[in-house]
Image: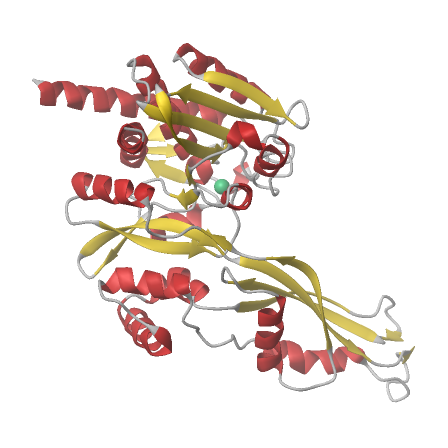
Length: 445
Ligand SMILES: [Zn+2]
């Protein structure tokens, strides 16, 4: 009987999460302009009815962030479930369902934000509503839900603003955000990704100089573009893999043995490329060192003038802990000696939390119970999420990306994010809601 009741409760929790997801998708929060306030007011009303103390905090009136807290009986840690409610745009002409329909068909929910990241918003909301209405209160510490605006354009009105302007209202010891949780299969085993960090973004201008002249007389000038061209071609090479902490942790968890140093990286990467080349491309190679991608070039402003200056912008992503000197050394190694200049236009270092923590242990235990034999694998993202504002503001906090996703694996989900026909299996919405309703009972006990 107890088991049957538990199953019924889980089903209704799952159904609640799915209907909340449909409502969230039907609310157009494409950023810009975002316009997050109407849905945030609805979320606030729901959470208040479940016993949460809620506040809308907005840098601009229509760009509201929601902070909702369920206080505990005694002092203890703050567990924050962090998410963003804005999305990138969608072109309905490219979709087989309307991107704001929230259609439920054949076990999938369709719409912009289904993966990034309204499923997690809905699962966390459903979990918090169920916990609140059940009468549960944290025995210690507090459970907090932070739903931000403006993540997709950098968080200036969202997480960044909250952490800088209202740090006391969002101070956290443990944070769960987007960026991890999708499962991969390896060696006959299922492993759920736990995102522990994010690479830094360094943008570097590579510049050559020459002498201007009339384009009708190519011999009289010195064409900076012709000096740049061979350098751009060399950027087709990438710096070699390096034994980064994130890379070694990932490979070691994958193989279940401690890999060390350059030799460990070479061995682990060769095996992965042979057995699962997509995992090597998507997850391993980006976190095993520095990547260089030329993205934008410019030269003469006039069609008939030999350029005296030519430039290409290099998008350089570096593991946490790497700085400007590391980027310059890798770029010079690839380009070789020559007559060129390098200048940073952006330099934002990477960030990370330690892999092993109390929160990691609780997540690992839950995964092992729900999916016997499965484990966790740490990874880092090659891009930013709101997590880096929380790591910067609350240095000792454990901040991870995790929302469990089993039916659609990482390699199937990745191409749908920010793309047409974004959708999520109902079973994964239900699994996520279950996770977020069970985790607070464990870490705030
Ligand atoms: Zn996102």
